[in-house]
Length: 346
Ligand SMILES: [Zn+2]
Image (cartoon, rainbow, N blue to C red; front, side):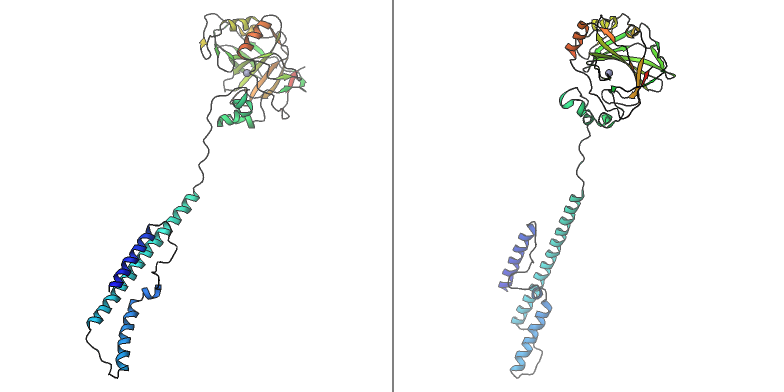
């Protein structure tokens, strides 16, 4: 009886240790015993009874049923204890198997979860050089994808235009109120309402104009020192951008008015009380090139009607130098033409 109690204590200690361990690959049977013997208390009992009968037969006594002795009771108690140990072992084995299965399921589920997607790019800072430069604009913000994948992007090298009788652009510009802001990318002039161009039977209203150095589009490979972009929009939101190439020459009055009203700080807006007439910048000759392109800065939206005047506009060296102190380079590199049709005035 004592050695069975010790066995129970030992078995439980082993089981507890194994239950607390992460994995329990080994069978839970005490050394020196087999699973069959541990889990067969009924046959052990029968064996004990059979042994008793056999012993008494050998002694020549008839096989009779005798009252249980103290020894019989102890044996029965041992058998009972063995049964309880076996039951407890079976129970603990089942619990451990269930835990192992749960762990396996958890591991499988964890492995099945797809990796977290990379964070969505929502940057707003862009520039003309370095990590935030034109080659990376499409990666800075998911909404700027056209800067990388568009196939009707601007600027381009304007050459091999189809010479046709292009309709004249009709200008309806007037002296207007204006404001000036250095927006961190260029000097931009907001113009009061009521200034229109009409082209392709559409009226586009002038929104603002701004400057690049050097010119963005080229004409037959030629780059101009600067360019003015006059940005228009029609009632459906379509854009038309009129480009005026700037070359060194006589001072330009409208540009001087803008420079005179340049704010002292970036992002501050100057709103003078005088008027500005955008018509003063438009060259006398109205021949132009036209093609379908894009905005030349993020988000690089396409479906922009480009109108590039053939005759450059003059501005003084001092006027050019003033802008170059603010923006020595704010031009996007050339983009692929991709077989787009370019038309030009005959
Ligand atoms: Zn521009």
